[in-house]
Image (cartoon, rainbow, N blue to C red; front, side, top):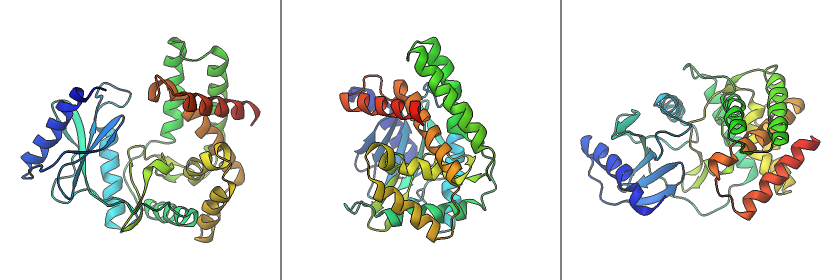
Length: 292
């Protein structure tokens, strides 16, 4: 997206902040992908949806994220809190949905596998007391529906569509046999921040109900099956179990299968012009799915 195309969402964020008595004194772009993350003051961060007509429409998913994030912050979970000086919303201005968060400072250190496992367990423990309505296995279910439109668009060869659909159907059936609870939903390394205040989880927009093994599969998938960093994956799982978490091997396997199928299905949406590295990762995911 050209620079001039983000003028409108930046204006929407600054005007919303102004309407709540906060004047932006900077505009530091922290992230620019499907959402635009802006630091507007020393403590205020806005996250704005750049494409209101994209696959995630409306405010319902933002409402879930806000409710879960507030619940966890109130229980002092290791999460980035919403900003206290603006109502949680979600907010919408000029067609752009957004919410507001407290700015945190990155530490510059890579997170330790053990700390990843411990903080994820802590979030899972506290999420069990969340009483809001959550969809069941939302990302895999959403991805299965996405395959229908990808098939119509010929975004993948027919053989790939069949592979992804088959793996998602079988994995969903298997995962539904295990205990369900509120999850992060999209627990990958990009949704973790190692900060001066400790390791914090963020980005709760994909929160749903499912087996804990889905989140565990999501956080270890790249390390175990793409990067060959088995010590990292094992360290995360061992720390989770040491805290008291139970991990069912079969559920974890089906979580890994479903995660690989989900990430593959979303490639045409997330990476319409994938780099050579992205293409290689997709190829390796599909090869693994063929053999798993």
